[in-house]
Image 1 (cartoon, protein in one colour):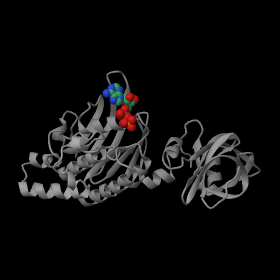
Image 2 (cartoon, helix red, strand yellow; image 1 turned 90 degrees about the vertical axis):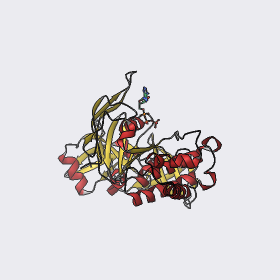
Image 3 (cartoon, protein in one colour; image 1 turned 60 degrees about the vertical axis):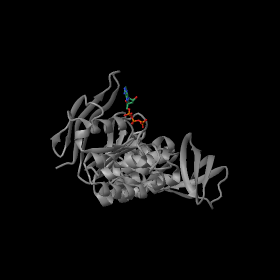
Length: 358
Ligand SMILES: Nc1ncnc2c1ncn2[C@@H]1O[C@H](COP(=O)(O)OP(=O)(O)OP(=O)(O)O)[C@@H](O)[C@H]1O
């Protein structure tokens, strides 16, 4: 039985915007699902439909196999953390966190214990007597997290809950959310545009673009086997380099014509490309900035270097295509950089459909 399932979901807003298109997603109990994608791809709309704040135009939402499309938000047994906090302004921080427990008529001493414990985890203990208006954005966001935490619902929905925190706090809170999930084993659906959050938090990641799911998979598979060139370039920092190349055959050997050179491919890859009729065709190849070797090979003109402590990110122009390379900061980088690509780490995509070949 799925904790939550979405089948053939479509959402049209009144202005005609088709925000979510034919979305299918089955979530098991205890999963931490991160929905990630660029601005406007339909992440928040999806979450709001699950919560019941937004009506579904077509399709079915089920919780534990029960149809909930027509159930009001309060009756869906979910808690939600919004980017905009949604705290009650006239209540103190303590009362805000305690609210879901009060609604369940929990004993006062039990409420106190749970509120104090949650406040400690998210670091808002000194502010329990204040009103939300007397807190910074980051503090309010942490209160909202504490409230969702104590509610301890079977399903918790989070919409960019860390967006107002500074980098250090965000890392700390990420760790807390993960620990909390491991302890409570509840089902979380978490929306973000931040691929680092997606990679570090999700047991599975859902990548969306233009209202459609591009891939649902574990963080590792999304990174290592992106389903198409969009996922490949969206996940990972620096972005994966995507370039055009041609597949050719010389004698019995299938090769890649690329950057003015022909490269011999690993036998399995060569077989796969030939079997799928890519010989004499253009394809897209992808390689990560980390999958290059700095040795005699291609030569690219350096455009920009960003030093990040122990590594440096290099943007370079290579035959008119911009490529990102990552190198140890100890490596001297001047006007040009010579590199070769680790051919075992190449990704291949169809140049028309942009779908993964291998
Ligand atoms: N109330 C609304 N009325 C009309 N169109 C809307 C409404 N809310 C969102 N949209 C449109 O629906 C699409 C999806 O929006 P949504 O907020 O779900 O995206 P998102 O991925 O969450 O973006 P962001 O990361 O910027 O929050 C966008 O094109 C947006 O302009």
